[in-house]
Each structure stands twice: as C-alpha cells, then as structure tokens.
View 1 (spheres, rainbow, N blue to C red):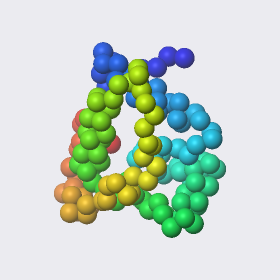
View 2: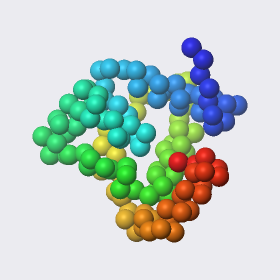
View 3: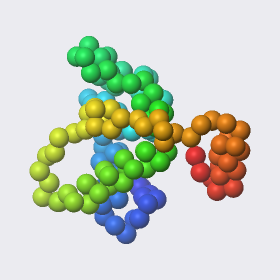
View 4: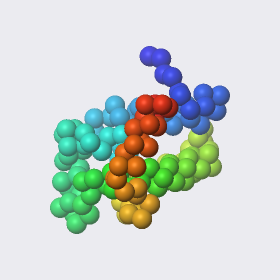
Length: 135
C-alpha cells in the first residue's frame, strides 16, 4: 500500500494523522469518524447508522446536517484547534485519550459565520472552484 500525504509529508504528525484516519475508516466495529467528508454517507454505513440511532435513543441525537450547518471558516477553525492538539501529543508514548464521539456537544454551528447563498456568493464559489480547484 502506498500512502500519499498531501499536507506536509516532511512532518510525521501529518503522516500519523492520515494513518489514524485510515485505520479508523477501515475498522468495521466502530462508526465512521464524524468529519465533514463522511457526513453525506453516514446513513449508508450500517455501524454508523446504528450508532446514530443509539445516540438518538440515549437523548443525544446527532444533527443530520451538523457539518453542513457550519461555514467553511468555522470548520477551518475547528480543524486548526484539533491540529494544535495533535502537535501537543506524544505520539510514540501515547496514552489513550478520550475520543470525540459527539462533536456537536463541543462545537455548535455559528449561523452568523455562514455565507448567504445569494448570486454573489455562488459566482464567487464557482470562480474559486473553476480557477483554483477549491471545493
């Protein structure tokens, strides 16, 4: 297997983070990581769907469009916060840490940061997507 780390392959932290995500994705005993990339397909994974139903029954329902309710700027802030925590970890003498299983309890969407979907926003996003390949 060949792994290509697109961020900064010279820094082992990014390689370790990629490996952790890959291992978690391949583990069919745990739900998918709760990240924006997998939000649209959470219901297709039986373990994740079962986990979400169990969370709802326990009185802690996961918002269906949790990550989509956030702006890209807020998602970037969360990513940077988590990345800072990763740089502080001692990866090679790692004590197990609590997993973030309910991010909606730690971060709430801030609607004031979300761009309004008017024609100016759509034209700007389309230009960025076509010109720079941004999502």
